[in-house]
Amino acid sequence: MTQFLGIGIGAGLVSALLFGVLLKATALAILLYLLAPLPILIVGLGWSHRAALVAAVTGALALALVVQPFLGLGFFAYLALPAWWLAYLALLGRPGADGTMEWYPTGRLLAWTAGTAGLAFVAIAVIAAPNYETFQSQLRGMTRTLIQVRADRAANPAPPAPKPDAPEADAKPPAEAPAEPGPQDPAEATRTEVANALAAIAPGLATHGLTVLLTFYLWAAARIVRISGRLLRPWPDLAATMMPRRVLAVLGGAVLLALVPGYPGVLGVAVAGALSAAFAIQGLAAFHDRSRGRPGRLALLLGLYLILFFTQGVALVALTLFGIADTALDRRRPRDAAGRP
Image 1 (cartoon, helix red, strand yellow):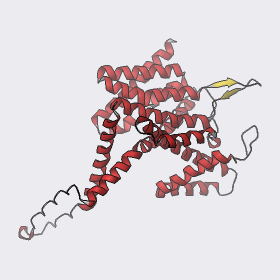
Image 2 (cartoon, rainbow, N blue to C red):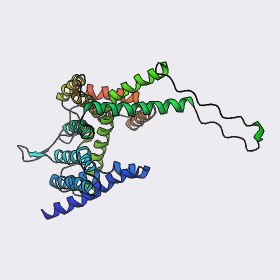
Image 3 (tube, one colour):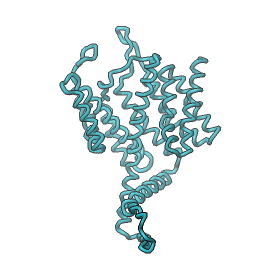
Image 4 (cartoon, rainbow, N blue to C red):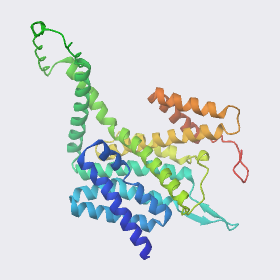
């Protein structure tokens, strides 16, 4: 007991330090902030979920006492508690009839990763703005600022540098700044509509990215613990990952819930965005799985990743649909006891 308490407290302090440097608002600080959940996941997978829970609570208390209570609560709800929960699920197992251990399936773990991302986003939103109208006002303000900055950059590109030998007499006076658009300006109205539409789907975009990050954290922590020889479960066949069909019903329910006003609607958008990321990850796994044993597999995988890199959103939508179809149809090739097709 003393060992997991000590390792948990140490990991929690490291995680809190990585999270707290975000206040410096530098590129390095943001990079370190993105690594904050890793220590909690590492001790959870390498020691026990109790050590991960100790780490989560320790990090939250450290930030609350040293910096401010709100920061500690945000850290606990958004990163620390999800990291503990995923470590707990990853180590769930039950003995089978033949005496072997049956570990928690990676497909269900992926589904819970998406669900955890959706719940974590809504939790941090409620903590930051208990009043829904305040939350919407803040969200719309952020999206309007983003749209305005992009519009200003497109309308006023950086002028070319003056030639060093140009005489001062030829220099032209700077042009007058354009007048602020009136309230009825069509361009301003269009930007407002785009900003409001972006604010409506912003929770889904945020949880889409958070799901990808949590999945990466879980994989990276498991790899680190496996290298150290402390991973408590065998390494799973990741390419065979497939979420159960009931997740499709959850996705449909999330889409319907998104039509409800208030925070329930935000939860629906958040869960739908998170599940779309999970299905995209499953689509990628299914492509790896179906290409096993085929000639030119390396070229096929390389082509897929190049398409994802250059087309980005379009290929991601196709990959998401492929993942949904993979779950709905369940046409994976049968495997033997060793996992070979």
